[in-house]
Amino acid sequence: MNPKITDWLGKKVWVIGASSGIGAETALLLLQKGAQVALSARQTTLLNQLAAGHSHAVVAPVDITDHTTLVKAHADLIQQWGKIDLTLIVAGGYNAMRADEFDLKAANRLIDLNLRGVLNCLDVVLPPLIKQGSGGVGIVGSVAGLSGLPKALIYGPTKAAIINLCESLYFDLHPKNIAVYLISPGFVKTPLTAGNDFEMPSLITAEVAAAELVGGMERGEFHIHFPKRFTNWLRFARLLPYRWYFALIRKTTGL
Image 1 (cartoon, rainbow, N blue to C red):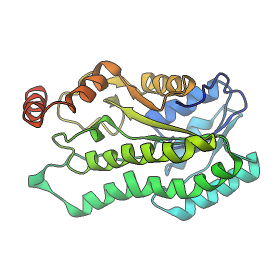
Image 2 (spheres, helix red, strand yellow; image 1 turned 120 degrees about the vertical axis):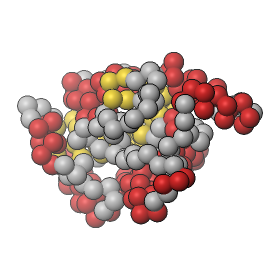
Image 3 (tube, helix red, strand yellow; image 1 turned 180 degrees about the vertical axis):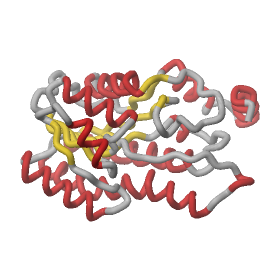
Image 4 (cartoon, rainbow, N blue to C red; image 1 turned 45 degrees about the vertical axis):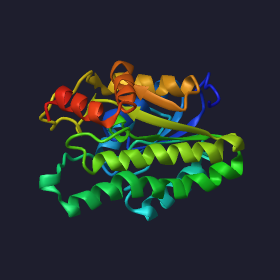
């Protein structure tokens, strides 16, 4: 559904959310494959540590909830590189929430980060992508966006919006020769999931997640989801009648 990527050598990739977890490991893997990689996140110290020893790494601090930082970072990269071939929007947040502990301030913070932050990124990268008529954009969502899950009262809806957004982007950008990647991880061992107090089926490392992500782009996939033994189960579950779905999720999670 997207052009296959057979060679990363010299490709200019902007990874937004590269300070830890999937973003950091994806950036490192792309550097190993010969890409030029811009590392962006709020934590400059971690970005500098990641870039150390990599001559093709550029550190470009941003806060995706602050549009002005994205505009500046993008302008700096265009001045240095001339263009950006691929932008990966990996930055995001998570906090568990259920109806009896609903917190509007926490909900709005998560919406600002997981949805409005993504829109801030798109506002900066889409016009030049469309103008150059090549390249791509990938957005990390989650299988939690496929259907409602316990403890994902706000997180799940933000990721459901990402699924819908990527599907709509594909309609508009594919005819313009621009790749769109919807990236839906299952449970990945990262700082975001470290505080979970429930069983995480098929938990994988960030290194494995990065390999799946990059491999999916190389194969030209639109929906890159992993690990498939878990994500395919959830994709099937969402097709069940609600009576069966609710019973299955309750039995599986104990929540």
